[in-house]
Image (cartoon, rainbow, N blue to C red; front, side, top):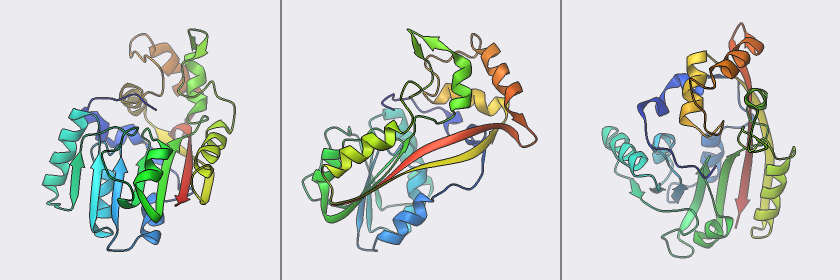
Amino acid sequence: MGVSYNYHPDYESALLRGVEEPRPWDLQTLISSLCEPQHNLLDIGCGTACKLIALTKKFKQIFAMEPNPSMLAKAIQNITLNGINSIFLISGLADSLPFQDNSFDFVTVMLAPHNAAEIYRVLKPGGYAILETIGERDKHELKLKFGYADNQLRGQLSNLKENTVKEVAEKEFRALFSNVTVQNGFWKTYYTREGLELLLEQTPTIKDYNRTLDAAALTQVCEALKTAKGIELTQHRVLITSKK
């Protein structure tokens, strides 16, 4: 969750994301249902800013924060290519947001590190925080094939008990916000082997993944989880919606 990866062209590859079955929620729809045209938005950990481009039609201004210089450079390129002038890119960290108190109508975090107290601080009264984070059972069937390192499973969050991420989020946000909803979401995604290799290289799914050393484990995954649609994995996300 806290690992910062440099931008690589494969990061935006459709192969890396696979073919998804319908999700239990749609973030764009959820955000659009709550915002007004005069509202502003802060997105923490914006990456290459691809997810924000569609939201420019919904908000007056969007401030997009990203600590990684190579990701930020690609975000600038994406925004420029799309002719967008309402997204303002900023370098910064989730634990110390470079904004005054009560600055934003919305704060979003999409699969990036967050600090609930900082989010609360920069939100206006009545503002919304919407976060999607990775759950402890995300791609669990894949992670089990990669074994242990230093007496712990190598899979991201695999050492947590079931429902841990949801319970921690509920405690964290209910201590600050008056109206909080936290829910688990699960859905299937289908990959090619090439897509899985890209996924493992471009994300922290498996600690210290090495295409050569881990080839046998990946082959086991591909054989065990192969279906007519592709290599089937279960996605697990936790959605947090809070109102200040």
